[in-house]
Length: 518
Image (cartoon, rainbow, N blue to C red):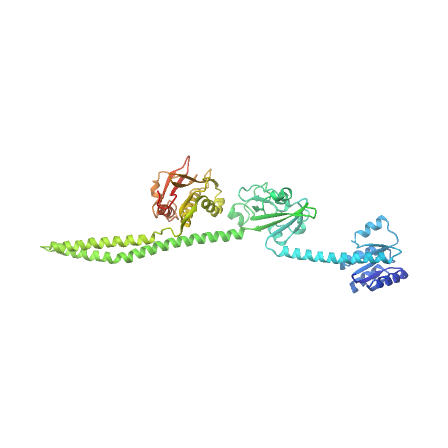
């Protein structure tokens, strides 16, 4: 049995004493006796009892129901009503104070014992529940994601502070409103209105998507009227709002029925900025790396070739001196000329030696699944494809094509060709932006085709595109296609460029199934 401190409020002193004796016999402690509602409120504040036994009818201006209401609101102390009669109006009014039970007079000890124990147990359970709710609310308030809880009808029950900031709604303003009024989102790719994610989860359950990308519009904007540029985010993207990742789950009751949903969403703006900064830093690093490699190569050539060149200059001067004599010694002159030829050959050997060091053989050769490599590469450039609004088509050979070679170099090959296609479709005036990647087999080799719908090759000689340092872009180094051809040729294959139909261009790399095969 739970022993408790109890306040008794009863205007009949004899009944009050009787109740006191019964309660004491049960092992409880009576902390006070009161005959009026006003005094009961003061004693409750002073003694902080565990339970109040409250007579409904009391002398004075404040009856037991009003006193119970004030005690519950101020102290959260449970109240059990005592009454000799109870009509419907009294019961209805008393129920609004959330009583923990009723005891009908005359009071019987077994009944009183049961009601008191049940009230104390319920109070302990309610206290644990309130503590759990506080922990739950504190947890949701401390996480960095926005959280919105909805009822079974899709109306907002709860929002944490992050959700308030991201939507522009306070929890009090949003309470009871449809989620579609508070969380207005567009599809990130198509900019079309998104279906209410919580409704999808409630109706489709496990068949609903686990997450999706959306653009959350500012408060006051609607998906029916395209938002106008009004802030820095709009200036960057052309569309108002912030990009968010949504995740939604159904709330299931004990009977397995959906009684609501919880929407969690993360602001991807900062993450995308970091990713873009990282991508730019990687590009700058690669650019610096290429320049450094070229500088090192040039320095090595200059250093190694300097000596034979100086010898050539010296011997050439000597040869001119011999020839300027009235009677030149042809034998000596021939010997000097032969030294010039040998030094020139030595300079060529030095250049070829350095060039051989610059060419890298496959570092880790093995069997490579070309289809899987295409899928992985397209996943790497998914953001660039989205940003450029390019539709991607793939036509990959049914049986996984495999070639023998260096996986990293082959991925760099596909990446260079895909990025070249994306850059070819950068013109915003293009009516169609389509990238098609296909793999096919035949003649003992595997073909990788990358097609774009850009302006095409025009009158340019396709072979010129593969020259080192040749570029049609103002900020291009002209190394991508040259490196791509080097990789293909290193693997015993060939890389070609042809005009597309009806527009665009087609780059095709044909690789032998095994290294060294044509």
